[in-house]
Length: 119
Image (cartoon, rainbow, N blue to C red; front, side, top):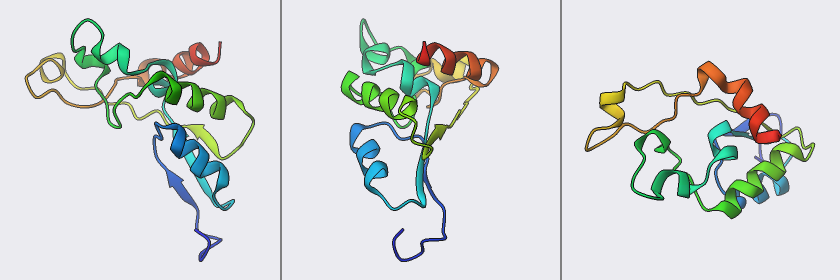
């Protein structure tokens, strides 16, 4: 990043507080996208009460502290953090299989999901 200051570098779909801090301290040509599902859900959505395959995505949902750091970054006014919808419309039988497909289908309601996260 520092050796090529005109090269735009985007970290796609960050999911941790470490990534937030890294982007905040990186050179100005570095930015990051944040998905609506990483702003709305933590790993409890995936694991509490049994595995819920429709919350399985990559990067995987993390602890609440990471979700809170992402939300703070997304609402903090730093233009280097922006939306990254990453919609994955897998069929129900592929999501609910023994080796389910990673991804959350959000394209149909991405704007509404971001609005919910920022409410």
